[in-house]
Image 1 (spheres, rainbow, N blue to C red):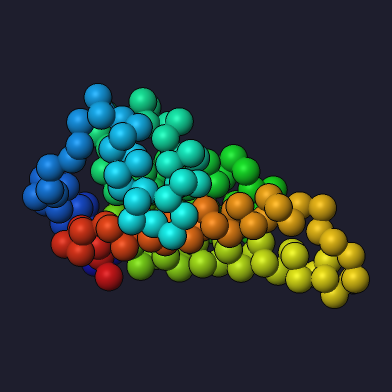
Image 2 (image 1 turned 180 degrees about the vertical axis):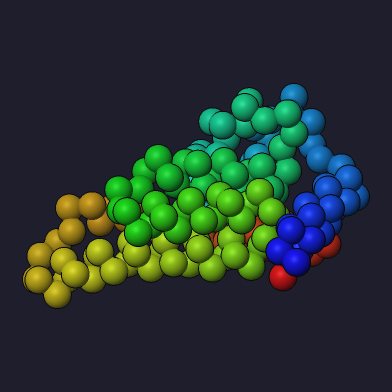
Length: 156
């Protein structure tokens, strides 16, 4: 039964990828990233962090920009819980599972905010507060991008 379900998931994913809307050619790279990032909560940060990874992709669309953001987010995150959530998010991107992407990015964002709160309760400033704020904004970008994953590609 589990094998049949896994096969069904793989088949649905394959059909969804074949039926996916056309993507922007990589030659347009950074400008395509900027265009997609316009629809996020922090377009400048999105373009700055994802744009430098555009040349690694054959095509640039909302899903690949989301992958770029999660990769950039992973490299800047210093927290194990957040890293675990980001790993789950990366797996969800592979399945085009927008619901799980949003959930895991929300949990990663909460990890950053929990860290800041612990310093506030101790009556001191978090020395990583500026980085945390940037990571919180990047998580919001990722959630915005997950809303651009076509519904027919999402499993939830």
